[in-house]
Picture 1: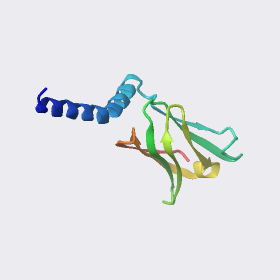
Picture 2 (picture 1 turned 180 degrees about the horizontal axis):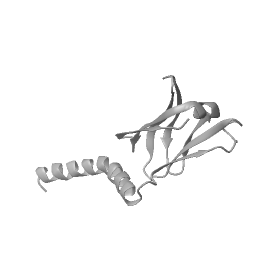
Picture 3 (picture 1 turned 30 degrees about the horizontal axis):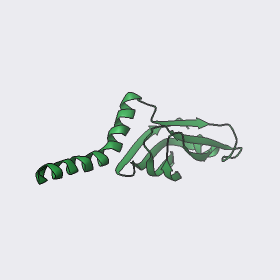
Picture 4 (picture 1 turned 90 degrees about the horizontal axis):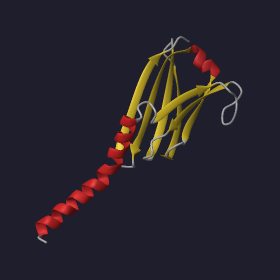
Length: 137
């Protein structure tokens, strides 16, 4: 076997090892749209949230682990002041969740909310998702 062939096959193998987590993540998202990351808000009291708090739960259901995950929710009031809530995890695997406990008075007075989710797919590829929505408050 020639040295060029060995080098070529080695390069293909290295690229395949690094590209596989991203390809698998994108395949799962394309095959199951709106199911890789699910956000749910509940007013049911219970751990880790208190009686006057709403639980905002982000559940990750993609089979490829996500590392260094941070969820930030920023609620802005009519006067311009804002409240920032954060939850983080070193690793999110399929079925694991991040929960933010949001005081009901903040939700009642908020005029807008923005969410930012950051992490890395398979600990290699950075991911950042941001969203902004007005609220009735």
